[in-house]
Image 1 (tube, rainbow, N blue to C red):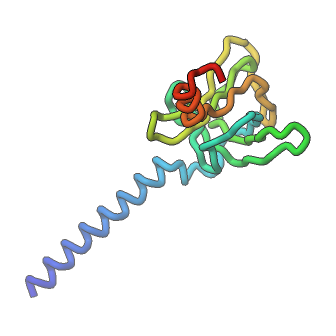
Image 2 (cartoon, rainbow, N blue to C red; image 1 turned 120 degrees about the vertical axis):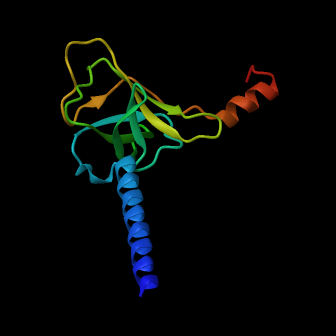
Length: 148
């Protein structure tokens, strides 16, 4: 009988640990936020490495996620829609840049805040953008002599 009690206690502890890891992973991924936030959009020449669910960061802190990527067929630019957490006001002279986490890391959308006293409203488009920089093309330019 004592073996059954021990098995139940160990099984319960493992189940509680698994639930704890699940809750932690959901918080890190931003799954229980309920879509709280307001949408903004930006168009990029190149949105390499950005997909649905990519982090949007301000000062290195995740403040939103990318919710949509589409091609503008007239300008051939990648139009990206993303959310910004409620309570965070982005100045209307801010820049949006696709940054890399490092040589082997992924890309994320970074907001570089400006100094304007006015802020973007829900649904506005950020005009000052910089697309992704391809490390492969930079290396090819370096190897080829840099003047190309």
